[in-house]
Amino acid sequence: MVFVVAGSLVRTPLPLAVRWLLVAAVLAAVWLRDLGVLKFTLPENRRLVPESVLRLGRHIGPLQFGLEMGTGARTYLPSGLPYAGAVAVLLIASVPAALCAGIGFGLGRAMMTMSNLRYGPDNIWSDEWDRHGRRLGTMMGSAFVLALLVLAASTML
Amino acid sequence: MTAEPVAGYRRSIWHPLAIAAVLVAVTVGVAGTAGTTVTASGPGWPVLGLWLCLGITAGYAASGST
Image (cartoon, rainbow over all chains, first blue to last red; front, side, top):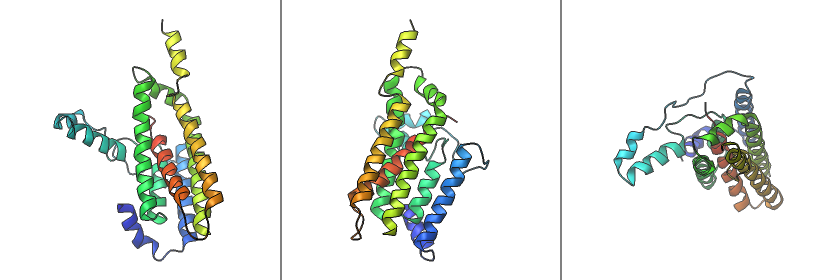
């Protein structure tokens, strides 16, 4: 919601086509960064959520952990796609669309923890992720680009 | 003792690649639906679904270790 509110100020002087070009430029930059072609730092809170939050109680502790982990507020973000998504929300999304993107981001983060727990012991899910990291990045990047392309086409109608 | 369970894990539906394949398939499906149903009257549920897919792919893509 913060992005939509801030975006309402940024969007005013920019035509829709220019805003989509900006989204495409950011996406290209972060994707090239993920592939190792470009090297630059993105804003990131490089800290894990501490276990101490779980001492806040049976319900509040896990809730805070989930909120911080799910929103990416206090964790590592090894992919640039969330940044491109944030710029798309900032420059393009309506309020319902921004809500959907935010809920989706949380679901994507939850999918990681859920599948990690169900896959096997000793964090071997993460080992598998690292083993197939490039292919996974390509798959997720392709799906992300496809979604953006169709959204661009739908908003330009 | 360990070889068989690992092979089993690799076939699991919870494997990172299996989850990614499902996400790609869902995104393609929603994109196809949105691409064929959006009209000049404005975006509908498929477009919101596409924003949802956009968020899910971004969130899941950030699952790897640093």
